[in-house]
Image (cartoon, rainbow, N blue to C red; front, side, top):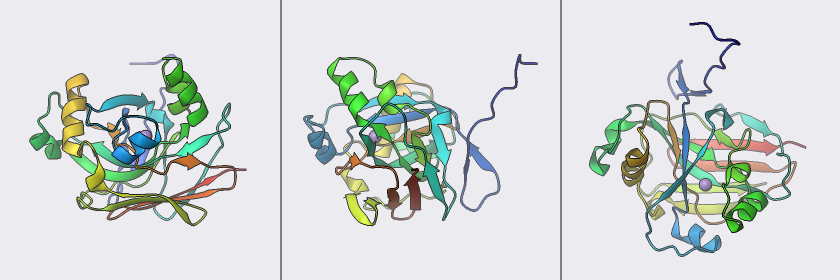
Length: 230
Ligand code: MN
């Protein structure tokens, strides 16, 4: 099959211990999945069903181990926020997956940043309009190397800006577990190999400016370093 112009290759994320890359298909994100973050965003943290939004697959920017990514400050915002998140990489597709069967669909785990134009997101939210301009912009999803083993259930998740910790929690604070997220999401969409799921961010989100160094960390998954370009 010929195309009228060359089709772009998928974004490829390094996999720890392997030469081949993980080809990204879709990026699903969970909103408000830590109670303390739901509260700081002005929502009731009761265990309402998880909700989902998407980023384009090519919004992912892979960050190699021990590298520092230079991330451009996006256009049309004056309030760029960091959200550090556990990212689940899907290796086996499926629909209507049971929570107890979810592990078999997971290829691995990574640390990611759901970068957010908070001013635009909140404007859209207030107006009852879609969030895309706040969430789905170019380079809005830096992701570190994928690890084939799961982080521990009480692993710490943390983000520091210029050496100061801004976000700190543990994965057992997730309102909806990875298995429950996969179960819910696969009821709405047929998951496919190459899909990524951002599982939500803990409390402490805030703004960054040009020149800031963001260092994310999840126990067992290593670190992710991003510099906001000047
Ligand atoms: Mn998020």
